[in-house]
Image 1 (tube, rainbow, N blue to C red):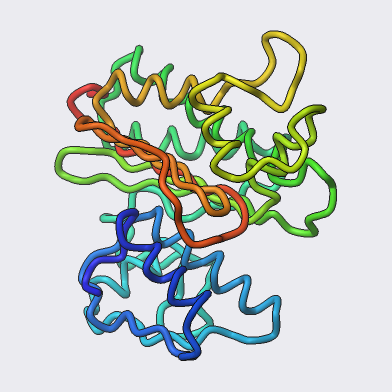
Image 2: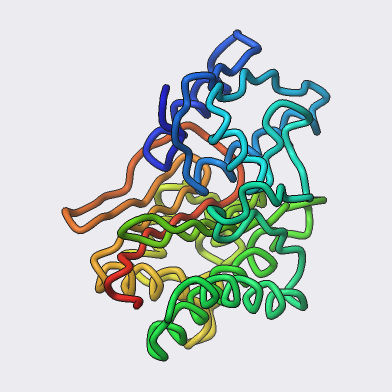
Length: 270
C-alpha cells in the first residue's frame, strides 16, 4: 500500500479484524489524508486499551513521517502525540484536535477557523457555511458518540488539511455509532448500521422525535453535494459515500464509532 486514504483505510481495518499477522506494514506509504490518519490513531487506541499494542512498520518517507507527527501521530515511537512537531507546521493546516465535550466546541471551532483564515481569504458566505458545518459536526460527538452513557472515552477528534484543489475536513470518534444512537428512539431498536445510515440520509430520520431536532448530518451532506464535493461517513459496518459522479451505501469491515470526511473544492470557498 502506497496511499493511506479515505479510499484505502478499509484495507487496514479488514487486515486488523481478519489477519493473524501482528505487524501492520506501512513502509511503502507515500501519501496519507486526515480521514485515514484519524482512523489509524483510533486503531492504535483500541489496541492499547486491549493490552495488545499494534506493531507498525512506519513509512520510510521522512516527509510523510514528519507530516504524520505534525498531525498528531508519532510515527516511530508510541504512535500518538498531543505535541505537534513545529518542523512541518507550514504544511499542516490543522493537526488532530480532541473534542471532549460540548462546552469546548466553540474554542475548537475558533481554532480551526483561525488557522484556515490565516492561510486563505475566505468569503463571508463560505466562512459562515464552514463554521456552521464544523459546529454541527463537532457537536455530533458529545450528542451521539456516548448517547448511552456507556463509553468511557468516545475520543472525539478532528483535523483539516489543504490540497491544490480542495480542503479536507475529517472528524472521528470511537463511540456507540449511528445504529445504537438512532436505536435509542422508540421503534428503531436493533437496526443495522446500513439501515441507520439509510434512515438518516435518505429518510431524514433523527434520534430525536421532536420536530425540528436532528438532521444535521443530512443537511451537511446536501451542502457538500451542492458544492460538488466528496462526502464519506463510516459507522460500524456501513459507509455512505458520494462524489460528483455519484455514490451509494457500502458494506465495510466493522469499526467502532463514526468517522466522517469532507473534501470541499477550494473554488467554492475562496
